[in-house]
Length: 263
Image 1 (cartoon, rainbow, N blue to C red):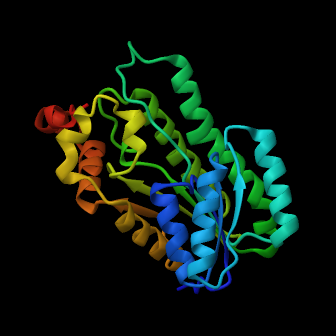
Image 2 (cartoon, rainbow, N blue to C red):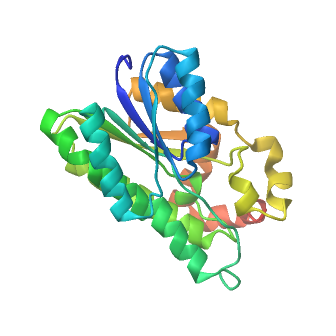
C-alpha cells in the first residue's frame, strides 16, 4: 500500500475526462498532480481549481506528446522545478473509428504518434530518474480494444495492442528495479473521446448502457496508484470476453461476432 501524500504525479491528457478526474482526486489525497495536455487554457483552469480547493501546488505544462523534442524539453524543465517524478500516468490518446478501407493512413499515423510513441517518449523521459532512486510507477492507459479488436477500429486497436506489448515488455525489464508498471484496459467511457472517434454517434447509442463514467474509472486508477498491480480491467466482465477470444477464438467468433460489430 502506497501513501500518495507529497507524491509528484504526472498526468498526460489531463485537460478533460479521466485525466482531469484523476488530478482532482489525487490532489484531495495530498499528492501534487502535474498536468500535461495540448490545451494550456484548460489546464490552467483545472490547476487553479485544484489550488483553490486543496493545499497542493498543482503545476501544468502545455505538451503535445507526439512531438518528441517538446516532450524532452518539457520534462527537462519539469525535473528542474520538482526534482523527481513518483508516478507517470500515460493517459493521452485518441481514436477514430473507420473501416480500414475508408480509413486515412494519416489518421492512423497520428494515432500511433500519440497513443504509442507519445506514451513511449514520456516513459523514456521519466525512467532514468526513477532508475536512480529505484522506485516509481508507470501507468499506461491502453484499452479493451488492445485485447479484443472489433470492426471499424483497426488503426485504434492496433495502437492499443502496441501499448500493451510495450507495457508488458518494460514490466519484465524493470521487475528488479523497484519500478511498478501497470496497464489500464477500460471499455467505452462516457467522455469527449467519442466526439472524434464516433462522429455519427451510432456506436455511442448502441453501447450507452454499458459505458463507464470517467469519475468511476478515475477512482479505480487512484486505487491502482495506492495498490500497484499488473493490470486494471474495466469493467471486469468485459475482460472475460477478451480471455474467451484468446482461448477459443473460433467459438467466440460464432457466438459473439455480431455483438462486437456495433460501430
